[in-house]
Image 1 (cartoon, rainbow, N blue to C red):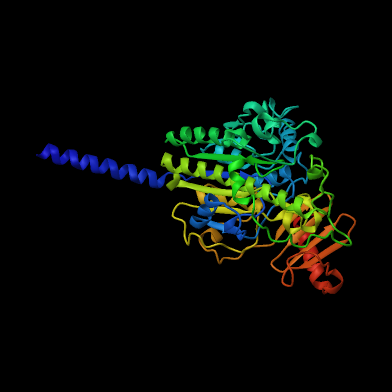
Image 2: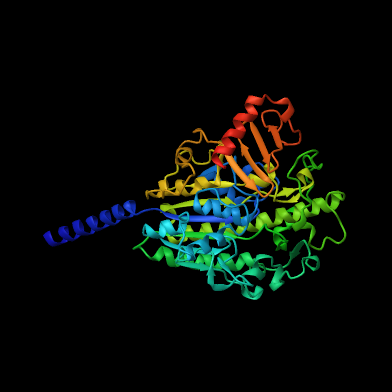
Length: 472
């Protein structure tokens, strides 16, 4: 009897200790990066979009409706997010940093390097830094040219029939690779399962990685999953196009080209593809077809997010994992007569951000606080209990994660044409030649009327001073 009682006590103590150990374990991090994803999601107000999995993440976490990226281009935006500080405006920012590392120069600490240093297993799958798989070379698969040297324990890209990461990046169904863009259709909807496009393979591999990481109870994990769609060309399995085939879309807002100083561009990336001789700026039926195919790609990306989240739950790691969904920049769908990114308007710079923590406070309550991508690094440090590196200049969003009514701060962005600051009231764009655009968001959020001549000089100078102080 005494032995039996002692055995019961031992078992109970073992269970309690295991629970205590689990409670004390550092949280894992799951970072999901989605390429070219503007806030075209149901949970961000686009009610015609089918995005149930991302909507569920927003319903259980904190959606940031006024999140702005640092640059309207993939590489520079991802550099800023991964380093927690402003950087170069070109897609080569990550590779430039790698060259400085090779030369023994001082560089900002990256998120995966910092988490790895603090005991995390760091893994990336898909497009996380710039090239899918994080390598350089002709086909982006040269192991001797890592984008982030010795910072990921594993950085993976299953190319399948697309042969290599370059092929997967701009791939269409069943291994079609972009060589001459003018011979590749700008959109496509092919019959088949999720793996007929590259993201299906990326997510398959991500699920395998999650299984491996969750089974290792000696170390927490930092897993980054990079989903390529809805990046051009707009290709997704036909089943994701079905909800949109006959849908009537709302008119494109402010579809005219801006007048005066502007960061407008000719949508060169989009216009390079085969468009069957049609121009969405003059052909409204074609414009709507483009928008429908973009929507299908969003729903495909959402399904991929759903698979990753379901696997996280299946492994048992969900209750101790901080989940972040981040769009690397926005994308114009005809606003300002632009079909693409690469401008300093709202449509290029605003993207979705959702953060969900274990024991999330006030789940599902969105925030309109203005924040920026450089804030991600210090936020994840605070949420996981590790210190921040001195190179980080972003602001921790933990107060807003805890309290959606907490204030944000102004956001800085930049590109080759200039730089911009966004506050709750204004967007000021300063061109390299000194010219200024000033839009008043308290009056009109379309950024179509430059009010620089109608705005008090003190207001303009205050905005310029902050912009040039933070980004000399």
